[in-house]
Image (cartoon, rainbow, N blue to C red; front, side, top):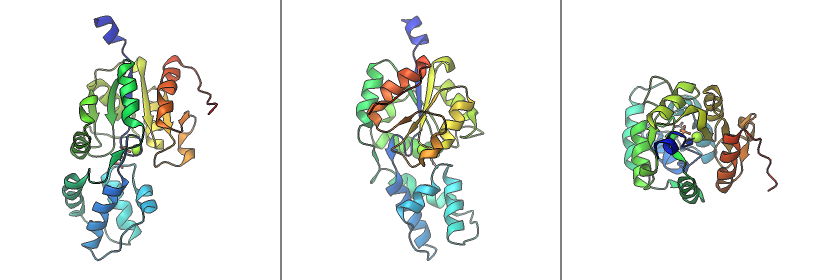
Length: 229
Ligand SMILES: O=C(O)COP(=O)(O)O
Ligand SMILES: [Mg+2]
């Protein structure tokens, strides 16, 4: 058994825009923050463009969009509100729970590497009943660096007990493709997420979650994926 475990492949998932559609609750917390400053709400499209580089950058982009100066009280206020409401409307993308079942049954070790702060990510995954599926959670503040730094991916992989020679990064943002590739892992881009299609770069794109098992097997084998669907 020890031999099989040593050979177990690992899939490292991004969270926002990959496993879950978190935009409604991020938008709601952001709008409450803005409302407290007399500012109008954001559209879902605006919020989508703010997400991907962690909460400090989300707030920086939102404040810049409203012409507001930086406010050091905004980060703790946003996080306290968001952590309390992270799973009000946020749900896994359709097909994700089934794909996690399939990957688990196929012997994949699974981890999450997200730029969302670790506490908020853990609360969300626990509220959705998903946390126990993952061997590790590397949040945007878990390590000294975060995506696109490959050390975030590698530290998450190490925390999961995974092997870099048999691991694949899966995400919806160029930060995921860039960090995975720089870590020496194959990367798969998720076309259902928040990223624009050109963020895939040279990574194969999964257009639906149920394409992931086949793409992951191909990535491990070093085989380029050609979709006929
Ligand atoms: O918090 C963010 O900005 C994005 O988080 P993600 O890395 O899970 O997509
Ligand atoms: Mg993402």
